[in-house]
Image (tube, rainbow, N blue to C red):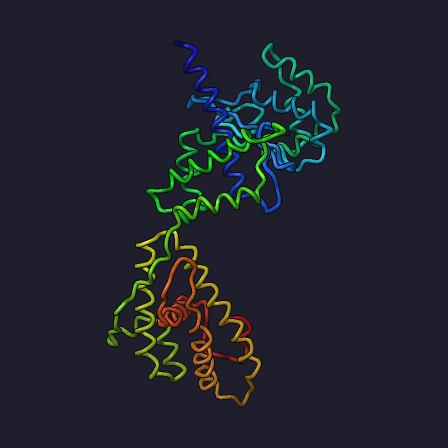
Length: 370
């Protein structure tokens, strides 16, 4: 009976490795491959990651911790293969012990790292690994240690599954919450399958193939685009003094645009709030949309500024700039994940940019940016 928990924890360690590999697949560049149990626990032939999992919450990475010494020794043993790697990572759920040689590892230079690890007192557990490291060329050891990162205190398997994978943007932004766990399990099954069907017994994940399969899984759970939530908000002109964009319109003597502008601004703001409440994953898309409007209008502004002269009526030119800006962005009724966007939304988000002072529609000869 006592051996079963030990076997289970070892299997859990392998499953944890698969989960780390899956996250790498989410973030890998097109055309690459992710290897498991080859060139390190997880590798893309540029970065090699050793994945160490412990079920103990208080596990500490001490000077003579076998996970570090075995990892370093293995790299040295296969150094001809690893020589041109950019990075080596020890990904561990253990926490670096205060006062150990690993404390402030990121801040140490390669020479100090070498001195610290060679100065420790070896023991029977790490003796063979330590001797292998000590016998290695010291200059090459420094170069290796310069590339060696320690990611300590990483989430345990259960937390990694819940916090990192289920909440990864690759899943969270496209799969409804009730379906995310089932979708994730499909992807983890795909990772295991690639070893089972391998004719060479090399466990590799071709990222292009992974993305094709990912999309086929997504199609089963795809979230339909959100139908744009219409707002019927209307402006209370008695509160117009509270709005910066109203003050600007008054300054350029465009009072007749104030009522319509306030309506567009309030409707767009209410619709945005409704979209975020309905689907929080749209936040980034909506922010990008506002940013695109700002960029378009600021680019248009440059051409209007070029036409200014000392004899210009800048208020009249500012009114034309405002009209041209409204005209240019009115057709921007496409947001990823949203359908049937109403024409008031881009106009209202332009006014939002003016309200937060990201855009100034009051043209001045000395104006060079906003």
